[in-house]
Length: 403
Ligand code: LMR
Image 1: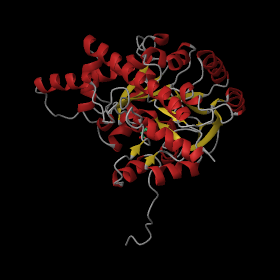
Image 2: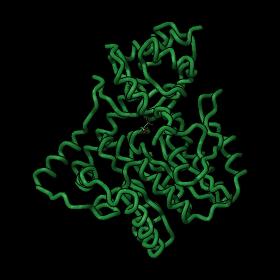
Image 3: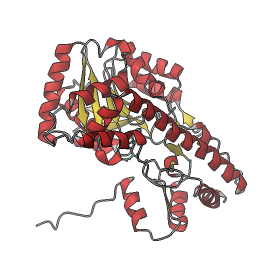
Image 4: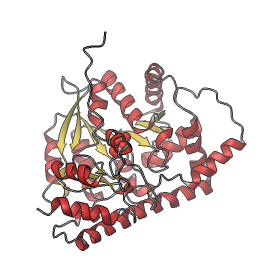
């Protein structure tokens, strides 16, 4: 019956975790998936999350279904975290927010909505993604019947932003194109536009009437400051644009396995917001009926309590700081190991990832000889680097690059 079904390839990111788990080498290192580890290399549960869970347990809540769009206290708090008072959009009731199965689920629902309702200027319904982008963006949008295409983003020569190339490409697109932007801490490069560059990008996107879709998976992780990290999203709103904003609580609250996030659609008026919400509900009902409740309750409890919210900001800052200190250590250890190459981009890049510049062959060697797992595009999850493995990593990186 199923003889025609062929073995599919492993996922470029989560497949590495599978390979890592099978590896019996004692000093193996997983720098594939973007998941925060403490300095002991252990998964980290935030204190604000543990405290919220205690309160939830004490409240003896029932396990009834959530509404299709997710609980209101969660949605309101989530939208406020992303948009604050940008262009008064929330106060004017013109934002639709639905809970999503984290970032992936939010992007997928956004894609289904766009495929059904957006008046694409191109026949094959294209979404333009930065080069490079998160590997999962491609299959997510393809599955929605939207064709992923690219615009320039990363400059290999400077290990920084190809701002000129990006602006030229965005300018060349047909007016009204759908453009995906990483709100902050670009995955995989760790390279973000400066506020001034965001102003220019926003002006161009507005002039071209493109539809901005923000993937905001790392709010808080770029700078340790939630408002700073939402700068681009809020600036686009202030300029009168109507972005889609997809949030994830996997990284900033460490709620990876809870699969909690949100999709926000900024519209012109409450009637539009309500119509869009009604259509999103129809789509969600057919996909997974309604969202899981536990993660949303944790997020709502943390964001709606002053003390827990303050604790979250402190803890996110601490995670971002630890990653920054590991960037410095890695550069120092590479020099100590004898590397003569310029690794300064490791410190210039921000967020969870470093786009190391390692070639696919060098990555292969890191995996097979040193049991250090990372994606084949040379992306290192800095969140997995710790005092215990940074020296080993630097030695291995030097060994595979010192030709
Ligand atoms: C990553 O890029 O490693 C994370 O966003 C995790 C994932 O789901 O790929």
